[in-house]
Every structure is written in structure tokens, then in C-alpha cells.
Length: 80
Figure (cartoon, one colour):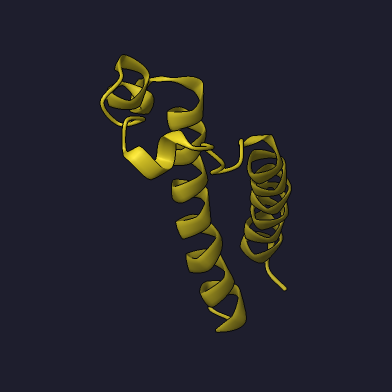
């Protein structure tokens, strides 16, 4: 194996560990009875959720998930 394969493997393992921590750090989708009426999205918190801690965690999780899949395919194809 080349040095590049080891570096990509280490990056892959780091992404895996960070992804697990991020998924565990996120809150559940339970919104209680407010979800039935649809009033959750009309509040200030619902409209600006992308700028909050939860919104940032969600965006980072999506980006790392895409990197995880791409690196999985590349490592499986033995391109390095």
C-alpha cells in the first residue's frame, strides 16, 4: 500500500469517529403536540433553525456523510 492509501485511510477513520459523535449529539425529531398543529415552523426558532447549533450540526453531518460515502467507494475501488 502506498502512503496516500494510509493517509486516506486515517482520514476515513477520523470522519467515521466524528460522524458518530455528531449523530449522537443531535436532538431527536420529537416536537410533541406542536408538530400536529404545524406551529413549530412559524416561530422565530423554527425559521432560524439553520443558524442555530442544531442547524450547524445537521449541515456538518450531511457534508461528512457525503465524504464518508465517497471515501468508502474510493477505498473499495483500490484507487490508491
